[in-house]
Length: 322
Image (cartoon, rainbow, N blue to C red; front, top):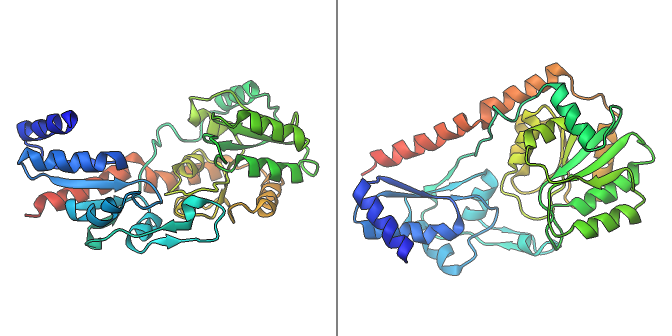
């Protein structure tokens, strides 16, 4: 409550016209601060998750309290407008995602953006240094999953290792990296040993320079098994000139389609994931021309500048509205 009162006074003192909340836990504090300010600013909320708001009051009343609700993909918009139900999904969070009530014309689809000044094809010297730090040799074809691995299932890292176990004899030059951190490390290390992947698959030390990491990989694998609103990591890989193998899940196809280099596979289908990885490992690496083309596609659609322009246009429309 102290924050809400402070924010309300700030809105009044600075005569703020637009207030924009991006995180679910900030929705109601933002709305209350705007109301007590007495300034009647336009209220915008952004939904970054491919799930409905968790509480019944939010699903029933949130849309009526804001001027616009931004969905970061058409799939998120579908969840909010219609609901999405997968009762037989092994993932509980995917089984029931009910819609929200209210004026659905307030829902706008605006894609986010990536820093295309950082995520771009880099000089080979930089990527080779990272590859050597990871223990990769020049002839190795490096698949990598980038993201946290938290219990109970992470982002599909275990399925990635199962697929690797199916193909590593056929592509002995392939290596399988898990980039990230989380509380599944011991479990993943055990999987590597059990699946006979010692020396072929490993967990990398934590990496805080993802543009370099993307350039050091030959193919990003994004085998998501939970919900996924969009998948900017796919855009980052494509902007770096790399093919992507990703789950055909939720908003992921919308992130994939602009670059459209790689494969979309059914989520949790280890066989299809292995097939896609086997195919990519047998193909030539992307050349300079292909990397440049992928980068330009991402620059046109998913740059921070392009994303900012879309948000600014929504702000202008709302500011003109009495």
